[in-house]
Amino acid sequence: GQNIDQPTEMTATEGAIVQINCTYQTSGFNGLFWYQQHAGEAPTFLSYNVLDGLEEKGRFSSFLSRSKGYSYLLLKELQMKDSASYLCVLGGGGNKLTFGTGTQLKVEL
Amino acid sequence: DGGITQSPKYLFRKEGQNVTLSCEQNLNHDAMYWYRQDPGQGLRLIYYSQIVNDFQKGDIAEGYSVSREKKESFPLTVTSAQKNPTAFYLCASSKPGQGGEKLFFGSGTQLSVL
Image (cartoon, rainbow over the protein chains, first blue to last red):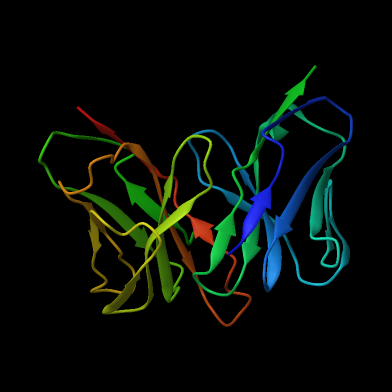
């Protein structure tokens, strides 16, 4: 089976940098996704890591280490609109996605 | 603009009643999915369909039914057999074979029991 762990809540200050960690146990997966979900809304795609290393996309970056079973999402220059839940998702192909419970990020002034 | 549309946004179910949640997409995606989201839990797969006229059970299919008569449409029926239907339901689509595990989600339906 697959298991994903991420912190339940985090709080950060507007303009700061925050790192949301995700650790996982799995027998195999294709890649790791990060999605953003505002309350009562649809999750939206942020990033997809297949290979180890850092993928940068604007203010958001995502890192994967397969050997360590570890990923993180890095958010820079935090804005109030970044307050949302961030979902770590293991992709095993097609329907075989395993979702973490999400990290609720609160950005404060 | 292409997208995936769910309706209604809010739905109430009475005891013993079946209700149907609508999901329509104009992204020309082959695969469609239904997930259930409960507070403090990750999304769980109810049903999925990789192609028209074919669908498969996910992890929590009991008490639910689906159909896939058209590529664009994948309605979900919550039957009276589902004893704990209160949840946020998300429909998604993807186009396998082209990095297609990336899911596009609808805006969700919040189902509550009266």
